[in-house]
Structure formats: structure tokens, C-alpha cells
Length: 338
Image 1: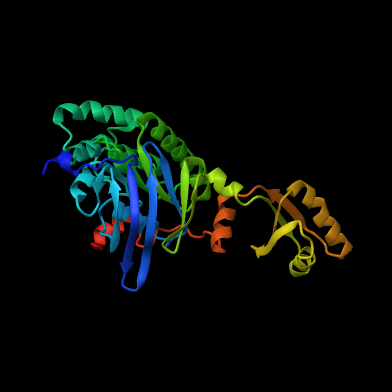
Image 2: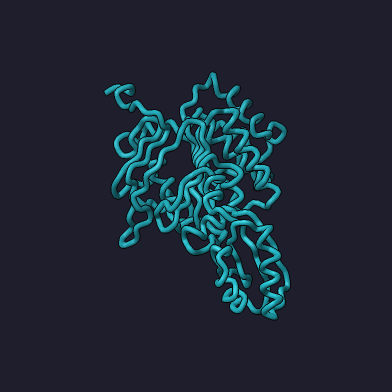
């Protein structure tokens, strides 16, 4: 069978069909279905343990599905895993570079591992160092790199063999907000310049909102919503008013009697109100509180965010800063989970 025989004619770079993974009695990934187009930045957004990393692990052929399958770059992940691996790049959640080598040496080593022809390696490495803006640090040991510089080099390493798809598992986990913002900008520019398809996992709302063309919200192994971020937020059709008061329950009871409050809930010690017209509703909330003798400490208003979307579909917030359900792709690979 030739390599041409293995290629599937398809319009999507990735096509996931009923993808499922079970660990004992735990259904980590539950019959996922989605497609990703060429050049798209696609996000899997959800809390730790939602099944994001397990999904990426199956798409990268690190982990075998219990049932279902997926097509990546025209290859079936269960039937032709070697072809899949040769056509993708991966940036692991946990650091996976050798800090005893320089940045350039790390890229040279991975160029050899991926079979990049010797005659092409030097130019390819120079181009990638320029792409991630590390030319001046190329010959410094990795142990001297900051967290953001390491991330950028890992992305360059993932691109060394011209992959069609780049998988990023929590690409900015553990970075400070400023560095995180720089990495977001870099990933966004990368997708445009290289026309590469990017799939990333994240539990950062801002990351999904600013980077992704489309977002799949994942909870308990299922996709509960999938669309572009603006549509997901727009579907809530309302603004969120946050009210801080010592009489939360009393005010909530009073506001339940009016039809312009679509929803009210207690969250983080505040009363959150979903209303259709926030600017019109704000003074009316104040009037109702005053007429009931309820003192309001503070109020704020904002348009729906992806946090609100997640809360709407799942009834809870995304929490946590640590790795996903098995500590990321590196941990799955290290412990040999199949």
C-alpha cells in the first residue's frame, strides 16, 4: 500500500467521529464529534478533568480510543498512527526540552528525530528562531531561558518538520499574565503567517476568547456547546449585573417578581442578574432595593463572557490552575497509559 492510498479525500483537516475513551468506570471522553478546517484555531475549553488532554492525546495517537475514531490530515488515527505523527506538531503541557542544551541544539536534535534533511536543517532552524524571536538567545543554554522563551522555543520545535496541524496543550499554563499575553499574540500571528491549523486546550476564558476561531466547551467528557466565541456569548441575549449586598436572598426574592430579570443566582458572595437591557435595568434594581430597605454596597455590569456561557451550560464555574486529568500529554506518555 502506498502513502497515496492512505490519504482520505476530505475538506476538513480534522474530523472527529464518536471519539470515546474510558478508564475503568470513568468515561473521560464521551462520544465527541467535531471538525476543524484548514488554518483554523480551534479551542477545547473546560475545567481540569473535563477530558481536554485525553482528547488531544487520542488525536496525537499517544492514547488509543476505546471506541470511535478521527481523521487527522487525511489519516485515520487508529489505522495509520505513524502517518498522523509525521504530519503534526505537539507542544506539551509540561516542559519537555533539554535544559542542558542550547536553544539551537534542541532544534537540531529534533530536526534529526523528525528526519528533516541535513541540507535543509540550518535554514529551517534559522527561520524558526526568527519566527519566535529567539535569534539572540539561540546559543544560550535552555536553563537561562525564561518561561515564555521556553514556550516559544517549544513551539518552534513543534514546527521543525512543517506540520499541517499544531497541538498546544495548555500553552500558557503557569506563565505570568504579561508573558501569557505575549504568547497569545504570537500564536495568533503564527496561525496567519504559516496557515497552520492549531488545536489548543485551555481553561483560561480570555485565551479561548482572544485566540480561537471556534470553541468547544467541554464538561465531563462531553461537548456542551460549540461555536465561535462571539456567537456563544451572543446566544445568552443579555447583560450581567453583579450586586454586592448583605441581603442577597431578600433582594433576589424581590427581583424574582419582575419579568425583566431573566435569571438570578448567588455567586462569589454576590447576586448575579441576567437582564436583557443592562443600562435600563441598573436603576430599576436600585429602586427596588431602596423601596425594600435593602442597602447595596456596590454594583457592576458587563456583557456576557465565556465564563457566563460555561456557567449557563454547566451550572458551575471553571476553577483550577493545575494540569488536566492526567497531568498533560507528557504525563500520559510517561506513565504509558493506553
